[in-house]
Image (tube, rainbow, N blue to C red):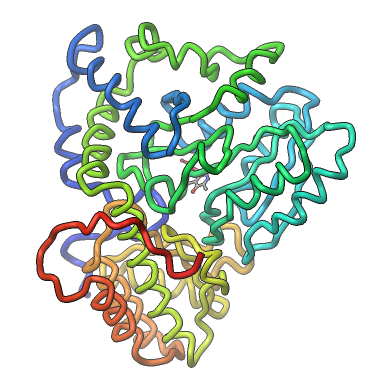
Length: 411
Ligand SMILES: *Cc1c(COP(=O)(O)O)cnc(C)c1O
């Protein structure tokens, strides 16, 4: 009934594509042999490194998140190697399954679906690995199925405290450019991300960042499949021109524009925007949940992503709400991926090109849906969310970014 108008995909990827990115991609096929496309590709490299907080290397792949999962593993994990997966939802388990597909022995510590990795358990598991069999520790910055945010620095501390030499591999696909991340400072050896979430570009290209320690492990591999090998991909002479095949021409233009947008806003401001919008969402959910079944999947705010939120209702209510919001209001919410029962959950993507009025819009839509469907809920959710945004934005009426370092409410 009220769905005609601008549709809004509020799911955790693909995220909202900025008009600027779409306009940058709307062009004839460019010359792939010489000229602008090569210059732009060279220019992407330092900006991709800056977004990840690394001075080491990055390789670009044509592929989605699953593609870079396999790319990263293929360079360092072979048949018979052992990896330790720290699972906080469906996605880290999926990355582990990919390692299994490459012949690795996959050991998993499961932290459940609502809690972050406990570094103490990681330390104990690594200390118990007397023979040093574990070649890599794999986890996610954010698990998109649960909305759990992991303490990457804390897990690094656990690896160090155990005196273990394993590579530390982190999936940042959900939240690169949304949740704070510092690859080098936090001691991450390999990070992966894809274009279609915080990086605001259509699905189709992905990135593997790796340091010298990871590349030394790559050097000791018996063989690495040619397409996934990251070494030729960091050769400016060869790869930026030849891309192991045809360059992802239009994605390069789109990503250039998206990275320009991040640079113009300033990465710390981008993080602060996600932080503030997430707090508004949590305030609304707390108000709804004060009287009824609704609750945020992750109870502890310091363990919540600022890019994706998983919300639990009664069985069937998540599905009903999603259908109502899409068909009556034009807002598409994410499914209860990997949950049982999936129909009790919905997920909100608030990653990338998202601002205050968009968040107030989908919160208002959910509020109306709860009322229309007769799902019990507390009052005052929109009031609570708007109070958060009013407080954080303050009385200054200018658009200017404050460029202050992000201040997190909760660790
Ligand atoms: C989206 C996502 C993936 C998978 O990415 P695809 O592009 O769908 O293959 C993997 N891990 C995380 C954390 C994600 O958010």
